[in-house]
Amino acid sequence: AQSVTQPDIHITVSEGASLELRCNYSYGATPYLFWYVQSPGQGLQLLLKYFSGDTLVQGIKGFEAEFKRSQSSFNLRKPSVHWSDAAEYFCAVGGNQGGKLIFGQGTELSVKP
Amino acid sequence: NAGVMQNPRHLVRRRGQEARLRCSPMKGHSHVYWYRQLPEEGLKFMVYLQKENIIDESGMPKERFSAEFPKEGPSILRIQQVVRGDSAAYFCASSPPGVWGTEAFFGQGTRLTVV
Image (cartoon, rainbow over all chains, first blue to last red; front, side):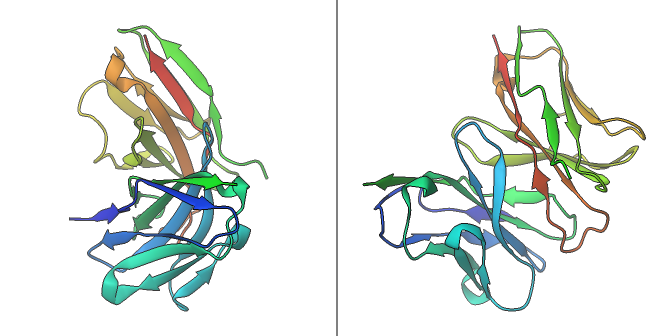
């Protein structure tokens, strides 16, 4: 079955600390992988995507993610978190139907001063 | 280039009424996707449409829900005889022609409340 698992429902980090959000996927074909961020009451903004090539991808707002096929993972990282990064983060996987994506449950990030 | 436009942003309906949610894709995008987000959950795919065609409706509830993307005008998600369980945020996304390696752009969503 195709699925995305984000094991951490809620994470709290201190401002300036590093961040890693976990994402594991199960997908029968070549996966296209995405990370989106959602602020309360807002839509989804794409942080970064992996289609092919270099397995370490850079995104907006200083985020990066690494695709590890052997571990079926696509973890999101940021070296130094800012208070404005507090939001909900969603990992998603897609394939040959464009914007038809399977989303994880999301990880809510809180940032403490 | 305006983004994906959804309206209304908020919609309140009484049980038994109909809800009509509209989505105008980004310019040049011919593929539209609808998702539903229940409270405290991720987004769940509902339906994938191209102009005048439903490509994949595997995520649509069997009854009361329908979607269209006419040749002219926005895509419409229609929910008939709404029930409290339909209360959710409904997101529309669009992507350009071609399906491999394309990125979906999301609208701000319509938050439906059924009272």
